[in-house]
Amino acid sequence: MKKTFRFVLDTNILLVSISSKSKYHWIYQSLPLQKYEIAITNDILMEYEEIISNKYSESVAKNVIRNLLLSHNVKQSKVFYNWDLIQHDKDDNKFVDCAIASNADYIVTNDKHFNCLNEVEFPIVKCINIH
Image (tube, rainbow, N blue to C red):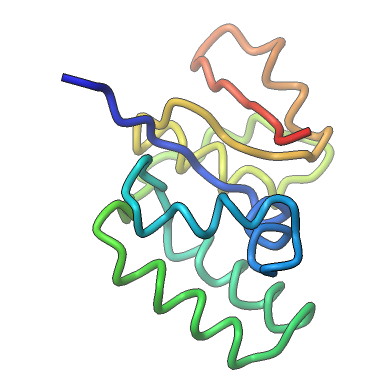
């Protein structure tokens, strides 16, 4: 059986994948095809909604959030422990904690603050970017 990868998408990745004009639109477009799973938390959803509302509009944000919540391959996770592994931008820790709690394969981000995770021996959190 083929393994389904589970990702945590940093807001910067979701943001650049929404527009049909983006070269990264395939990320958002392939979500309903269930080729991968996405792990989210309520904190992540709230950040997605806030940032998408600011960049596009409130209606676009609500549609994106609705699509995520209705997708069978979007898994809501509960975080029971805050690891506090990223010191330079503590707000990024919500993605790390979600990745650990959901046993995600990777965090997908283009944010250099996540590079510090390469130095952490435990827990192991792998990150990839889309460039």
